[in-house]
Image: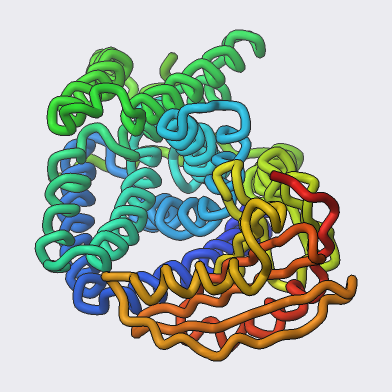
Length: 286
Length: 191
């Protein structure tokens, strides 16, 4: 069936337009606040994207995925999730602020609760297309990582440009943001959160388990991703920012690896004999 | 040699495609439309043109187009429009805080003594509110900001509106500030 006749294609297109409408004013404001800082941020975050893109593709090279679908995942995170996130995160932030007295926790919980579903919906959208070749949980992890990468890059670009407006040395601030939010946080940022939640989504839409177990797995992984996101953004250990950064990051990464590595080992076990005997690909994990 | 591309994923039925598309659209609607609306309602940020804003049940004003409720920290009521904020200070008694003339003179003296900015202080204007109370206002400007002070008194109580803006933004909202100042009604003596 033609991709044009697929209703999700049209939902994606409409959301893309809304995402652009939400995102462009933020980009213009960021540019006007510090043109040099913004342009440097664009260059550095583009370089980071190329490197991260290559690294994820290289890491999952034993099972290649279509480039166009990968680009669609990245665009969902970069444009749709960030563009609509300006309204969603603000709204959830107001709700959290009304019921949670601590401002730091309210903001952290709002970010996790709003941004994780926004990103995961992109993985769900892609899973409805046969051409994305999403069969195993590792495929969902792969697309989740690219949705998260898109979100991380655009969000960080906006933050860096905002930071550049307030400091005496905009260029230094932009470089610091790339090092801190990009290079150092690469393993425990949005790609990790979304990839983790995507494991639960894979169980929901590809597993043959009972509906109750599939929904429990899906909601459990989504809540876990939200909780880790909130923990990372939270004021815990805020008296020492660097200790907080690495300690909370290590927790996020450890939880992700606890789910990811068994999946990878299982896929390797299943693929090896199958590829020799029947040439059948590994079926849905979990 | 690179491994071959895996087989296509399961083909979603037409029903699954539509269910998925609707689920995505509804989820996005909940996140991007319903959540902000609920947030506005819960945080008390929902205010529109024509709504009545009160401070400590001692003073009210009618909100003009383009203004939204900000965070006044519980003590004052603050509304925002672009780069401009308007703080509505609850009414105080003339016996305690002085007359309108004395109140505005105190405010201007504080501006003149401001060590951080050099203020160009305008002429004090006198007018009457819709409720018939006396209103004094003055616009002062520095290089980076504009302050407009309105002091309104019914002879017993005195109310202050403090506007902080930027030179560019103040011109845009000046008319709506005057409109809201004229709508001020003193409801009680307060402190």
